[in-house]
Image 1 (cartoon, rainbow, N blue to C red):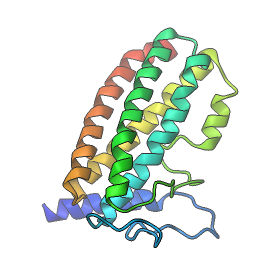
Image 2 (cartoon, helix red, strand yellow):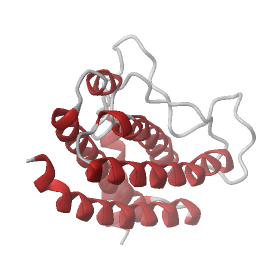
Image 3 (cartoon, rainbow, N blue to C red):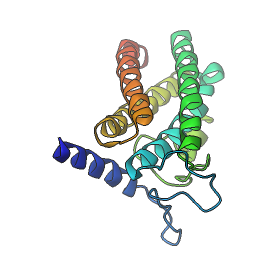
Image 4 (spheres, rainbow, N blue to C red):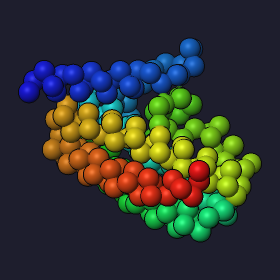
Length: 193
């Protein structure tokens, strides 16, 4: 059990280490909140902190992309799916943000400007604003599929390596939600070719 937890924690931290921050930018520490953060109600384990600090901006960026579908998607089923998923991702954010606060972590994107696997980037959003119709549908589905897969993988690591029961429960719920969304997405694959 301890070996599996250590492996999962190492996997999560390696994923986080893979973000491409500018060479001269200081890397945020997931092990300690900044001095300006409110006092911790329960100390933030580095794995739990890393997970919630990654999942929050991942969902925020996915919501930003999903929000474009109402006007840019060609297929009404893609628009409907995107609206439902946007609502679900916003619902997750209403659980992630209070978790950040309970850990005494700032509600800021510590990954701003980083190229994280599965995160919708600013470049992705710029591109999404230039395409519409079938091209938008294909782009949306590809980026959201990556988001769902990667966030499920990171959340599985949290369920194995995290120490906070509230974070682990939320991570487990996100894994289940991702599985269901990926199944729905498979059903929409024929729409985008």
